[in-house]
Image 1 (cartoon, rainbow, N blue to C red):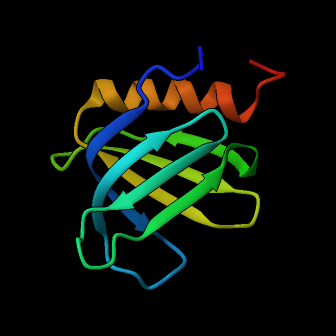
Image 2 (image 1 turned 90 degrees about the vertical axis):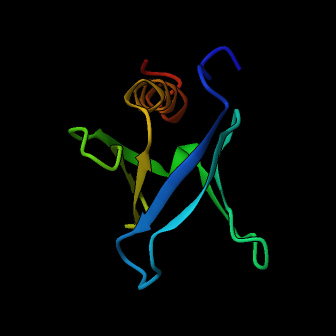
Length: 106
């Protein structure tokens, strides 16, 4: 848990570049083993779970008007983009994921 700087971020937008799903607004949670995205849509309340060891690369991209994009490339070829509203929150998530996805290296 010492690697997690920010365990919860609200109003995060999730874009899945492989599926045809529309961008979804929700809450991002970091645990010791997973990244969890919970959609804000009350009817479905879908969850997306990503195991830290499944993440092969993390890219923090330039801040835009809609927020700070964070790109997660997974070992199963899934590419997920998270748009985090605040740059500081994005940086904290980026640092936490860098440590959690490679515990022996960082």
